[in-house]
Length: 336
Image (cartoon, rainbow, N blue to C red; front, side):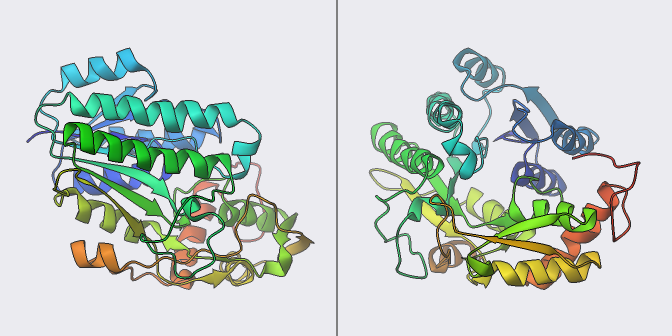
């Protein structure tokens, strides 16, 4: 069976996609540089689980490393599908270190494009974009037909640049590509820099959390298993045409307030939150809400995990991973 190249394999979504691909009998060649944007112990813990799976091979490699990616492609010429999820994540951090975002998200994406076009058997490149590309758009729900020329962060600008590069390579080299605009993905093995995870850590530690605009900001929280189902559903359905490139929203098609998220975390963790209110940062949008008609028509995508259920699953994993009981951190914390 030809391998699937998966970048960002040590990341949150990448780990779950790898597990799902292996479960359906695929051979996965994973790539990740395992950077220290957040605690590498969590990334290494994901990798440790993947390394026990038959059919998984791992390369510690930065996707912006042209020579390294070319060597990998030469060693795996039978690759037919690439799932490119590696990126420098985090909207707010892109204001702190914009160079890292251009290097990883733009240069890395370009190197993946160049690598993919030299794979003679390649059928499809699926890559991660972001709901952040909608920027200052106010029409809801966000549709793939909406203009996306008003980014509000460097991160969003790099993800839009990725979409434009993908279209250029599809036009120039007939390289079939699907960009997936992820909407606020959450769940077990998630990213500690995201609100739901950082809120959970603070709540069980009895520390305050910062909630913007009274918790009125709204997000289309999407459970990771639903995201994975959408990713896998796209793999065998490459676009065609003169420039075979498309972008698809992948979200829960339901917008919930941050205050609802906090209440669900309080219930699942068995402890009240200490809340500090603050104005919304300039890089944060007021609301995200995905129209998912296009991906549903293509793949049958139908997200089915309510936020209450997904947060309960996350909380159970969070407490177990950190060696905690609901109520506080213990001295034997595992890290992450």
